[in-house]
Length: 101
Image (tube, rainbow, N blue to C red; front, side):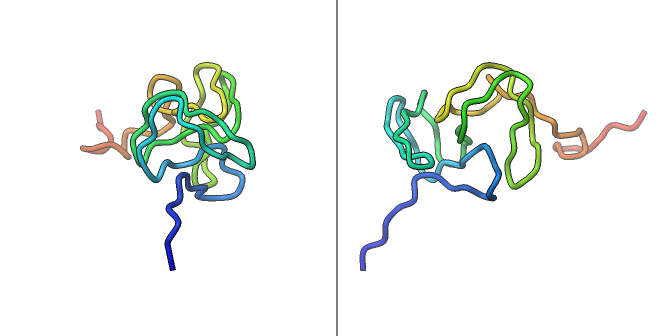
């Protein structure tokens, strides 16, 4: 039996991001919720792409939790990273932990 490779992974119903399971080349077409969408830029495996179109201020939801806020108009299928998402992680989640003063 041949295994079919998954292109995108929805971690939790209600998430508005999908995780890439492989490298995508800019312009490559992928099916997102029954719609063929072009990936906007080269996107490595493990990155996030938008499941829906988003506007500045919209919550970025992964694993059922808000992980950031969209900072630019973002189309369905667009890579989500530091160029268009402001992280809501707190310092204690980063290497070295929170600084105490």
